[in-house]
Image (cartoon, rainbow over the protein chains, first blue to last red):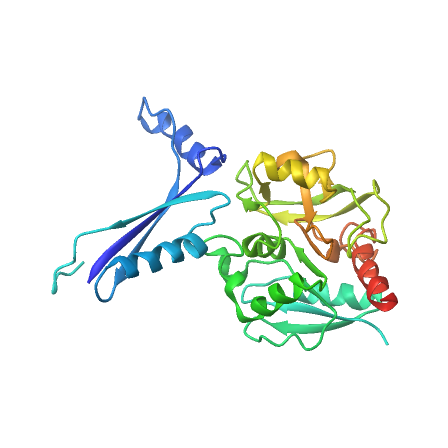
Length: 89
Length: 226
C-alpha cells in the first residue's frame, strides 16, 4: 500500500497562538535560538491500489474540501515510498 | 398558525434543548432535527445550536458540515430559508461557506465564559429585525474557538455591505478581527454569531435579562407575516 501525506499549515498571515505558546516555552526548557514556531497538521493516508494521477487528483480534492479549510490553511500533498508488505508500520 | 423552527442536534451538540426552549418562549414551535436525517420536516427556519459537534475534530464544524441534514440546509439556505448559527453553529456555517471567513482558537488560548456586551449593527436580517441598529445587548459567551478571521478584502466587503451583524463591546474576548461577533450573508437570511442569545431569554437564568429573545421574536414575526 502506498502512503500519501497531506500537510496542512495555517497561512502565513494567520496568527497561530498555539505555535507562539510552544515557542515561548522553549527558553524555559533550555532551547535557545528558535525565533518562531508554527503548528500544523499531518494526515497519513494509506491508499489501496495504485497512486496514479487520478488517485492523486481525488486526494487533492479531499484535502482542499475537507482536510484543510483553504480560507485559513494551505496544504501540500506528498507521495511517500510504498510500505512493503509485511512491514509492521 | 405559528412558525415551525427546526433545531439541529449533531453528536456533541450541547445547546439544542435551550434553543428549542427559546423558540417556544418566543411563541414558535420548536422542531428537533437529527443530523443523519435529510428531511427538514417542513420547517420554516433552522437554528444550528452551540456545542462541540463531532468533538470539534479536524476543525470546529468541519465534520458536521458534511452531515446529511446539512446537505438539505445548505441547499434551502441558498434558496432563502432563514438559518441562524450560534457558536458551534456559526463555525458550521463558515465551514459550509454560507458565511465567509473562518473561526480559530482564541488568541489567548483560554476557554471564555462570560456575559458579553454586544452592539447589534444591523436590523436588516431575518434574525435581528426586532432590534434597532446600534442597540446594545448582553448575552452569555462561551467558547475556545471564537476568533473570527477573514482576509482584508472580505472584511471590507462585509463592512461596506452592512453584513457585520454584531460587534463585541468593551472587551474583545478572543481576538476576532474588527471586533466581529457575528455576520450575515448578502441576502440576510443566514446569520451566525459566537455569543449565545438562546441563554438569555428569561430573567431567571443567563444574564438575568432577556436580551437574546429578539432573535427568536424577529424570525417569528418575519415568518408569520410572510
